[in-house]
Length: 375
Image (cartoon, rainbow, N blue to C red):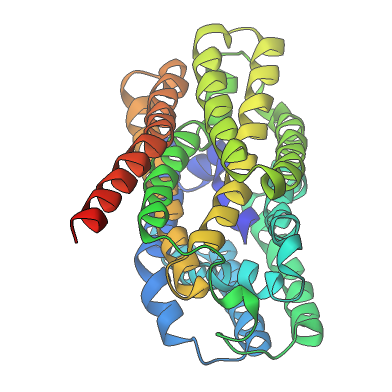
């Protein structure tokens, strides 16, 4: 699912040429995808709460397989967009329940590591999925890359149908947050929306930056994307360990590293070697964000973790959609060099919210104490 969501990033030029449109228009395929996930995550998750997890997850993967194949066979941009929106609907619910379902299979003390493993699957997309599909596209056509991912989706669907337990929502310790706090939950959603907007402002058009600014050949993008993907996997693995012991530090550190590396990419990314190093650091930081955020969401969820996870998914995909849109505007206007600079500014706002949050919590605590003393 993550490979298909991000596939236009690697195939940006090939898809634009074949469909006779601009790179910014192809970037809108990521924007529209994220908007659909953001809009339908919460209502659809509410709707399917009574469906057993095995049936739900395997059914969603079946929709993914069919709609991804339809994307590959679409004769024009309009039908391609429509097929991707169907895939986005399946992903909206899938990611809302996947981490919660997996967490319920293990003890609460293992939650951060389990979330890291689940989201580590997503972080493998830049390492294996997107580079492999990009390479296939470079050898033949971008459509072959989509068909290959659809075929792998069949394998995932069969494995899920065979191995995932038939539990229902609301069963087990993972169905509720361990330290419910509505105020902190909403703050995490704000940080998620800002941080992921910044991340995807840069990432959606990273191939354009590397080609136009750093001077890479388009044919070398599959290899470069592998390097970025490896850095992303390392980021997911590191934060999965740190978040279990220091959840807040893991989140603040990830956002700070992302903002700093994006700014450095804008300032020093004209050299190919420097650009790859800095882009790898941004990939490391970007991939560390989701597990750090989801671990916090499942801890402070004020109600059902399925619904809380769906709300976080909405904020996350608003960030993806907004990032692709903002990045497209900057690319078309100021050019690829300025895309990381705008991304750094957005991520810096997320960092500011995180740093102010303890002060707000302390002030709120003093107010609550004063009210209690008066009563």
